[in-house]
Length: 361
Image 1 (cartoon, one colour):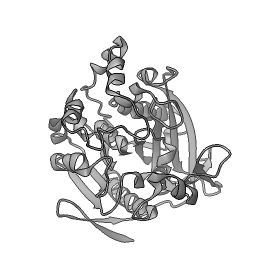
Image 2: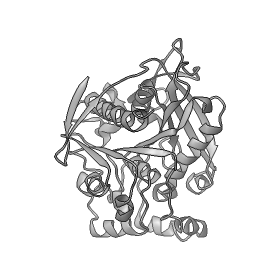
Image 3: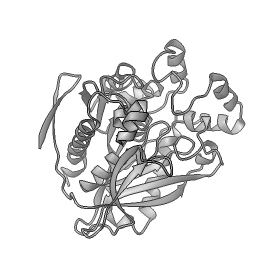
């Protein structure tokens, strides 16, 4: 299937859905450690939860995965997986995609993307970022120590590499990274971008009504709350490393969906990024406005491709809303059918990662 999308820089991007495996997808869960997690987690646990999707054996039986309050009808459909299934035989080692969720999200809410990539033959390693996920109590540290999100991905990759169930199937010479919203920011950090300390604060002081500067619906706190947090010595010590290099050396390509927090990044670091980057965003995004986020990055990163989706908003990139979700949750009311947006993102990611991680293999 061939589809074309107009981009904001006058190019035409042609994507093809390959679906090399198109068989069952397995899901396994692990927990690893990250020292900075204890600063961000409400209970000070130094833990990062890891979800891994992968091509499963042909006889694996999938079950539908949904999201919603216990005992009630689900609000989101994530897809279907076979929990703890055996890995598919055949290809000895498979390319890997690291996956970062958005502000206040979870690995599960990005399952629509991760499961699809696993069905196409990738091993997808996703995390729940400590202090900034839907499952746990959110914290201000989890929200503002944003550079540590890349360390969560590094810890998850290292844990998978050391896991004898997973490791034999991973090709660490073919690693990509993907993310949505703040996860797009995380993906760029893992691919070589750097935070410029103080830059985001200066931007928001001058642009308080920008979508990324306004209080976020997932978790709200005041400037005074943030100032009080940075009075703590251990937080100040962590903040001293904000501008460090968080590149994950194995990463060879980055795919960013509706990326946010681009104003926190050092433009010079974007200019010197070496790995290919693809950005997909919605022109109707009012949360991570393209004009101050994705389009800014696309103008600076040297080896970048850009896909713009008309009438698509920010939350269109979350898991598919159920009928109950569409009638009860404001973010589920989309102009473009969510399934269409997902399909375009999946096909674009498959084509991009196939070019960068499979073409020369």
